[in-house]
Length: 355
Image (tube, rainbow, N blue to C red; front, side, top):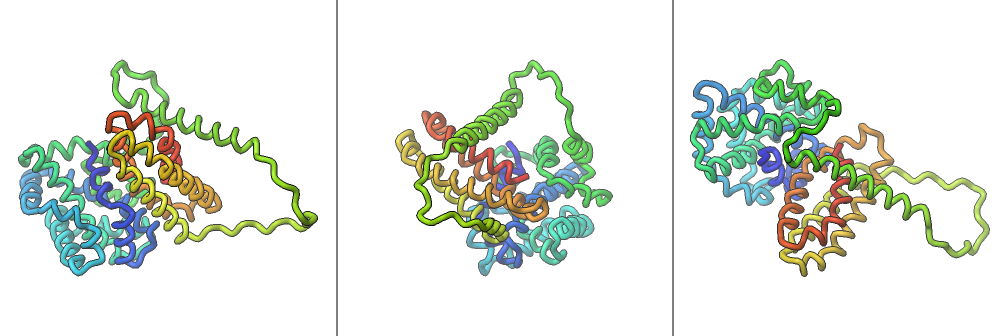
């Protein structure tokens, strides 16, 4: 279980779009800020739970929280309930972390996304109920007391540190927000040298090489297919001696829209799968979604690294929902063999675009 991923899964493209609209931000910037805010909030709560009496205070807040509202985020954000929802989130977060810590996170988010702290503070208010609701769901499902909640958060330190976007943790240094996971953040930021694999039969021994192999196979397939273009009819008119004009770079707004369209098409197709027959029927739609992601990748290649950052943030925020939908579909008997050859390169491309 990964609390960061569970919280992110509640924030699909539609919810991110509503958050962006309500704050007057682009979808890319909103996605970038969300991908930083979720682990920052969880880091703060982890530190709170480790303090004397902190876990009890957190558990008391969770006991009053109704997780059912998490299924209605699309209607709450941008609707008449948004202000109350945001105010309650801000109040709960301030009572747990303290005003100074909340202001520190808001300030770091503002610098990270290039927005004013008023907008980043409002974003924290919207996201606090999402994080607390996710934690409340786990508490109620497992019947955790205060000690159990503290242990749950302590077990998530590596996941929280790994989810911190590059450069964001530096903006929180000295604020105390990351004190509980500081060693984990340092490890996550330090490049690891190759080591001999351990004898344990864990997932990590084969998953990373498998993903690398899939990406390499897809790139090789793509290269070989591009290397033999079909013959085309000769042009009806003499070729112009003028050099063709360079293709214009795609605007950020268009890329955000293309990303949302591709991700929605992918997750929507996956949601229709209930057995082998529906999996086969979904393959053409999944292939279409893959073509959209290919087009997105080609368009993003025209942008500089800084210009691609908002798009990367948007996709980073949406990826947990994509992987969750794939895991749900491939968990159905017989489905994995049908759709994995189609979705594996899509996930590889989205993962690359999220960096």
